[in-house]
Image (cartoon, rainbow, N blue to C red; front, side, top):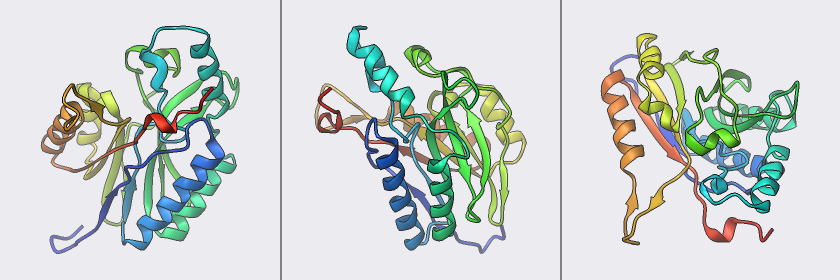
Length: 237
């Protein structure tokens, strides 16, 4: 990237369709195409945007916990399946590079899901897959441990792009690895904002502080993106 180059980056902060991977995929494709129309070279979704963050994991365990977990696994997606193919087609149509958080189903056992940051190029191909190295706290009920196979930036015409999931920004070595490999445009994927006791404010501290800190540490542009969830988005079941 030359000093006079200008590019547009997009943080797509929207709600998926919880427990519905087909509807969430369709909505994600529409949002990617809109980002392309708005001139975004690089668009970022939140953590496990497809099919949504497993919000129930911090609650008391009961029968609904296991039903929600089973439904969630059923809505995880497999790389190379129709959902990721649709995302690739939308990125190509939009002419936009995309990082989207997905619940990735293990193609061999179909019994494990990973918190994956999926990087898709504007040419319509999957460029990288980074599985969250160590799910945080109760997330380990839902997601398996990732590996470091995707812990590297991807070269694009405007620079190197990378991604980490949520609390991986609290872990020093994953961020250092990406910085040491020259990342320039980093996707920081978060599940969403948490309400504080004062309803007029949101607790942005973890997301913004760690995202801004990483921008300083890596000397990179950081796109801080998160999903959204309202009570009305949760199915009655």
